[in-house]
Amino acid sequence: MKRSILVSGGAGFIGSNFVQLLLRQRADWQVVNLDQLTYAGNLENLSAIEKDPRYAFVQGDICAQADVARAFAACRAPVAVVHFAAESHVDRSIQSGLPFVRTNVLGTQVLLDESRARKVERFVHVSTDEVYGSLGASGKFTEDTPLAPNSPYSASKAASDLLVRAAFHTHGFPGLITRCSNNYGPYQFPEKLIPLMIANASDDQPLPVYGDGMNVRDWLYVEDHCEALLAVLERGQPGEVYNIGGNNEYPNLAIVRLILATLKKPETLIRYVKDRPGHDRRYAIDAGKIHRELGWEPRFRFEQALPRTIQWYQANSLWLQRVRSGAYRDYYARQYGRS
Ligand code: NAD
Ligand code: TYD
Image 1 (cartoon, rainbow, N blue to C red):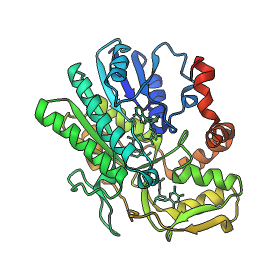
Image 2 (image 1 turned 135 degrees about the vertical axis):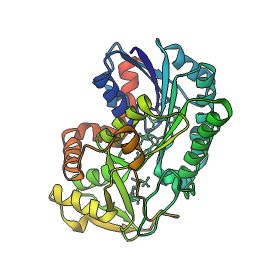
Image 3 (image 1 turned 90 degrees about the horizontal axis):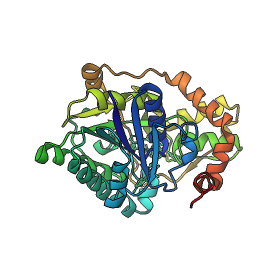
């Protein structure tokens, strides 16, 4: 079936993996990528497919109605939206919450309004398990766990989830919400735990571990997340929430040690630093609903996918270097002759 998928935030980590997966797996779909290219947006992530006639890039801000309208105008067939664009880093949200409220809350409402006006087929809102808050030593988040976000980032994502929910209940808008655990894999900006530790260890730089290093996250390989999103896009029920997780809990310190061991670097590189304020202790996801209803489960095992991720960063050291130096931002000007 011919379809246009409007992807917001497709130049970021998960969005760029998703755009590539769609073009690989759905031959007759067109993908329009609306991205503002903030510090986290990197068109180099998409250099392999940028000349594909089924792909179009629109630089724009989801908070600006005119930019969203331009992206819709580039779509050629019935449209579905997959909404990734967000400010996504907890530490940045602790420094300043405003950009998070602007993009994650206001931007989501603009995208919802423009999508509703055009009667899109579906709108998949890509959210996070962090909206549920923090767990103790046992238990898992289900889709019925009450929302209790603890950081400005997770609070802004919870607000955007509620706007999607309200659009469904008020207007019958075909919104679906996914809540995924921590992702890892190629093209992740090296401010998040795994790529930061790989980058620092490779350069023999200290590895900053917050607090006692015993905070637990449930890690999912990005390709598994993208396949789950495709399943929700094609077969999910509008109005429903789907948790997505890897059933793969690790304390941060264990991840850091694994990275050091894989890179054959000494544990003396570990530096315990001041804890993150309000640091959530543990996240764990019950992903039973998406497994039962849509048949999705992760394909990648951590034991293989973490070394594979480390190898990707080693093989793409130039990408990493350019991201870390800020030079990746010149790509747009070089590629498109604009700035
Ligand atoms: P990212 O920070 O790597 O990418 C975000 C992208 O959004 C960038 O390309 C950026 O340029 C774009 N963007 C930001 N503000 C914009 C705006 N106003 N208009 C248009 N584009 C804008 O993020 P990511 O890690 O790929 O996460 C994508 C989505 O998945 C987010 O909504 C995030 O909350 C969610 N999520 C992430 C994880 C994770 O582990 N990374 C886990 C669960 C959910
Ligand atoms: P992060 O990758 O920022 O994801 P999130 O906060 O959304 O879960 O952090 C993952 C875990 O790693 C979290 O418990 C904080 C910790 N962490 C460190 O210990 N040191 C660091 O330098 C970073 C960036 C994170």
